[in-house]
Image 1 (cartoon, rainbow, N blue to C red):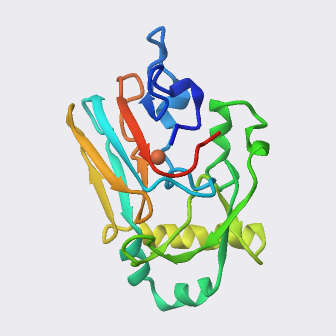
Image 2 (spheres, rainbow, N blue to C red):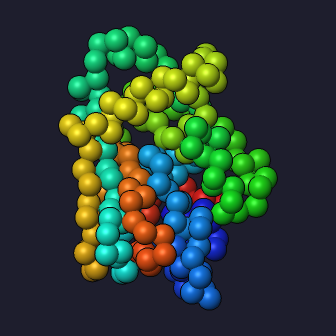
Length: 216
Ligand SMILES: [Fe+2]
């Protein structure tokens, strides 16, 4: 599945994109610094998101620069009863860049990019398509809200779910070494750049996504 932002695509292999904070002239790419630093799963705005993805570390900052992963099966099975009651029967409405943390995404592409996509609904609680394990499925960048709820109530519920799903019991921090290759299950996890590195230090990775429908 090609990355959605053309600027970062590998010139020869569109299914591979750079995650980089370095412009071609060597200056700092401000969007590249904060891109993907909010919790998400890739392609959540697409009808069929990718099945898995991988990152290969090339240049790693001397401080921080990690990637966080949240296990959305553990998040579901450990969900407190009051939150279970609040999410009963809900669907997410996913639309490009319209999640609580999505607005910055438009700095990386044309401002009307969101209008190229249709909203995609999927259950907030759904089985993993391969393992059948029950998952919580939402994304802070592209989940605009929940069906039948106001935008404000959706944002409040999403914040409560996020706090639980990204607590220490559900989350993993990967501290990179150059040459590391990390693969993850896009259905079962959310992830984010930890956003904890000095922006003037280069952080360069390659990313590939497997499966899903094309981003275009
Ligand atoms: Fe991502």
